[in-house]
Picture 1: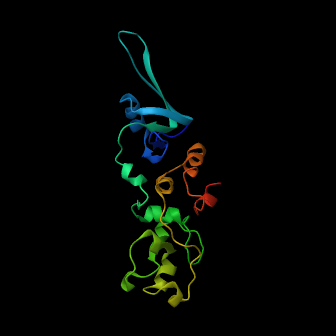
Picture 2 (picture 1 turned 90 degrees about the horizontal axis):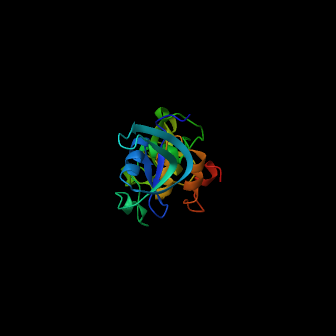
Picture 3 (picture 1 turned 60 degrees about the vertical axis):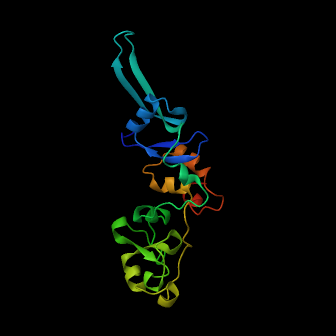
Length: 197
C-alpha cells in the first residue's frame, strides 16, 4: 500500500514531463476531464458516494503518470532557453548530496551552496557556477576559486533540463516514473548514472 503523499507525474499531451501532483489534484484533473490518458502502475483506487439515481458508486483509478490536455503554466519550461529555478534542495539533489570537493556524502543540514567563481569575484548565482559543498570545505575555500584554495572539483556543474529538474523535485520517484523521466534526459546527462540507466 502506497502512502497518500506518493506523487503522480503529470505530463502534457505529447508526454513531456510537467510537474508532480498529489492524488487530490490528479482526481480533480480526472473530474474536469483533462486527463487524456494514463500509464504506469496503479497508485490509488478512490471510491466516492453512491449515485441516488443509478445506485452506483463512483470509482476512480489513479495511475502513476497522467497526460493532461489544455494549456499548462509549465508550457514555457519546455523551451530550449529554459533555466529552472535554483534552490538548495534541487542543487543538493543534482549533486547527489555529495560535497563536490571532499567527495563525502552528507545530510542536507550539513551542506551548503558554493560558488565556484566566488560572488566577490563576479561569480553569478547560476546552476553552472554553483556546487554542493560540505560546510567545512565551503569555509576552507572561503572567497577563493578552487584553484586558489588548492581544491579540485569532482564534477562539472550543469544546468538541468526541465525533465531532469522534474526528477530532482520528485520525492519517492517510483521505478516506472523514473524510466519515463529518464527517456527525456539528454544522452549525456550526469543524472543517468544515478538513476539506473
